[in-house]
Amino acid sequence: MYRHELLERRAAPDLRDQVLGYRGFRFQAIGARRRLLIPDGVVKVMLGFGDPLRVLDSCDPARTWRGSSLAGGIRTTGAIGEHTGLIHGVTVLLSPLAAYRLFGVPMSEWAGLSVPPEDLCRRPWAGLSARLAQLPDWHSRFAVLDRVLRAALDAGPAVSPEVVWSWRRIQGSCGRVRVEELAAQTGWSRRHLERRFRCQTGLTPKGAAQVMRLQAALRLKEAGACWADAATQAGYHDQPHFDRAFKSMTGRTPSAFHSERLAASPHDAQDFVPGQVTSAILVHPT
Image (tube, rainbow, N blue to C red; front, side, top):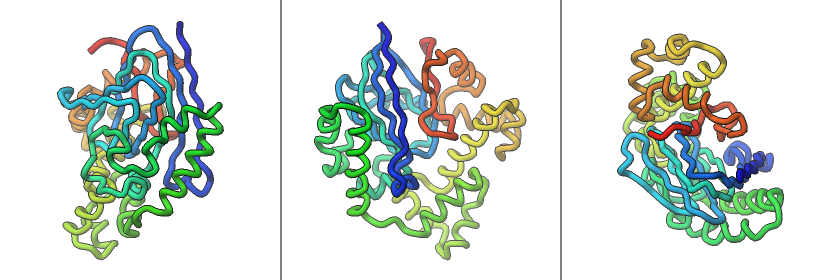
């Protein structure tokens, strides 16, 4: 028996620059499922209602995490999510700056990790999964998330305007901006910018630029460009440079990743974030 239930919804209008959306899901499949998650600059908080999820670092599979609910820190390397075929819950998609305000701990402390959200911060995460599971439908769950996250954001620590500006500049340029330029524009030293940026986003400015440049190349490929053109238009020296960067960040070659996306069922939603290339269903064992 195969059951596939997925409902995506945007957050309330006043939250949308920080809370990027919600994904309610319920899957019942025959056999385990695996998904490769690509670095995308988004923090994902999975609030599960039942069976656990297992997460592995795609470049270092010895690093693993397991839990019904997991907060995935921002990453510069890929991850593989696995479940038994039965999974039910909701994923909250956050900008790293919003995650800093919601969890109230330095993002650098859990970058690249997947940890139970209540281990990072009791409020509002402790008991939230159980509360959502008891509600009758997705719309009720999304409404509760809007209210809970709004209150938590209002109570959370402030983000430095210089870090906000730098993050948006890196995003807007698709990673094609020099750290020296960011430092000059903010009036900070490079070292001070890197320290504050890493604390509040989980990445250095250079690491964030690498993620944005990777995403730019993947979007170009999805739009029909060949790998060589996608690589050069995204700012890589040439396709071999892109191939090396892609494999170091995901553990796979670009062609293998593209083949995995093509092999998945058309019913499988592979991308979590609009306008981003975020994952591939792994159909074949690796």
